[in-house]
Amino acid sequence: MTATKRILLVEDEKSIREAVAAYLEKDGHWVTSAADGQAAIDAFERKQFDLVVLDLMLPKVPGEEVCRTIRDTSDVPIIMLTAKGEEEDRVAGLELGADDYLVKPFSPRELVARVRALLRRASVTTEPQRDHLDYGPLHIDVAGHRVILKDDELELTASEFKLLLTLARYPGRVYSRMELVEKVLGYDFEGYERTIDSHVKNLRAKLDDDPRDPKFIFTVHGVGYRFERPAQDD
Image (cartoon, rainbow, N blue to C red; front, side, top):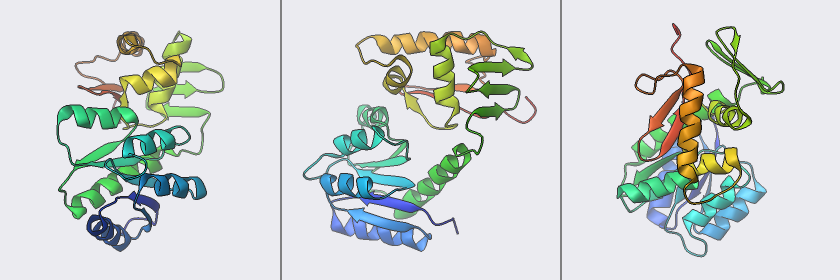
């Protein structure tokens, strides 16, 4: 059984809400349920959660707005539930800041498995030494604003350093291009998604990271990028 975590479950359909809550509680988690978007926001402001399961189609406040509100203050893992399976809807959910999604109807067992996977990933990212990140041959000195690869210090621009740090703090998490624009460049403007692609290309070159066979930065087609820990023998 997994370690007990606090999960916020936001779902307006009572039957789905109760079924999912039962499965999560059976898996050992503490669940707070909300039937509408405003109740979800209120609950998130009152308590600290380790993960959020969020339906998009909600009364009072839509799920998209709930996700934006949560992302304004927290990087808590979010799994979105949606009745739409089109690629553009999935991409839109991920661009809002969701880490994963499930299309209705779904199996509660599959949801629990995805919750476990996200919680494992999140537990890896909560490392004790926040000022120093070490991934095999790659060392990031956050406080010193230095990046060392195989004993060689890399000359990164401020944007390249921030991009690398943003991705490396949460290995495995997929960031959309627009998320990276906001986090790295600090603004949101049409066309700047391509700017992020240019920064990624330059950063990969300095990391000697072949996009066709990456060690660190992986492309998630149609969405954005994610950072992975390198294999042990790299």
